[in-house]
Length: 332
Image (cartoon, rainbow, N blue to C red; front, top):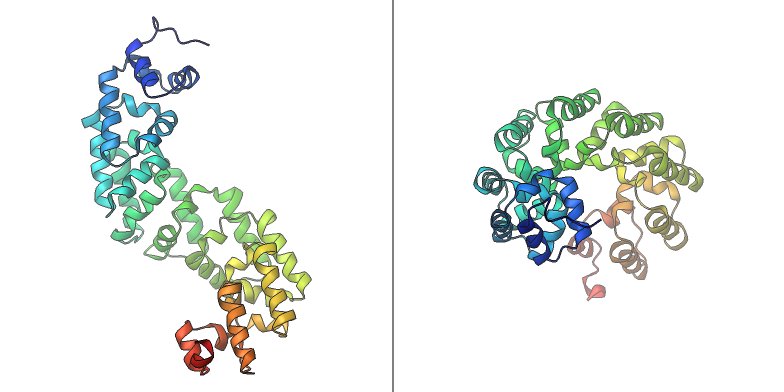
């Protein structure tokens, strides 16, 4: 469908064409934002230039404007500048603001007074440290579009049911993983927490998972957690042992079976010659890199015929490891 310049301001159409937009893209933007019809190319040019001036590369601007054409219809000094200046106070590095806008350009269409300030106050009341506030917003700028009264409050209430307190613990969870707030409590977080309880995790264990690895709560229990649990059962771990492994290293339920868990367990049993249940005493075994840590250290210990536990072998940096077992000469 061709754009009729008699119906829409021809100056804004030429503005888009001069910047490489085709007629189909222009048509889509007019559908997304009816206000474009009344925008003059001079105003659009000012907003475009301003976005470049704050560090957004021109090659990214067409994509940003396509996602949120309303940006060109907003008042430069009434909307764009105040939001950018406020965001700039949250991030120590200028490129962080530009990156946040590129990630979620709709952030510029929200009000500083009506959306951003109340959002910051909401997180501060939960004990989120001031230094973390900016990181949260800039890492997940979509937060500004969430309703405090419904979506965010529901999230806080859910975390409180896990035994997390509102005077700091919940704030730490949200600061550690701001993306958790984008998930549905009923469709994702509660089913996942229920699954973790069903495999033996206590309330205290669940609190530890939420505080240290909130990303585990964000994963689908049926599609991700259950297959990993089933794999560990096939390896020979009992239910209690699996609960110990999950509590000690929760990402064991979201790591790739093929690329992470299976190669490490095979190396543990077939190469290191250890019993599989040794990892229940040191679940962090699954955290260490296979080539850079496990294979290298096992090789050095084997050359010296040294026997030790997994924690003694792995729970230290390379220098301490070499000193502990007198391996500096062999390593050099």
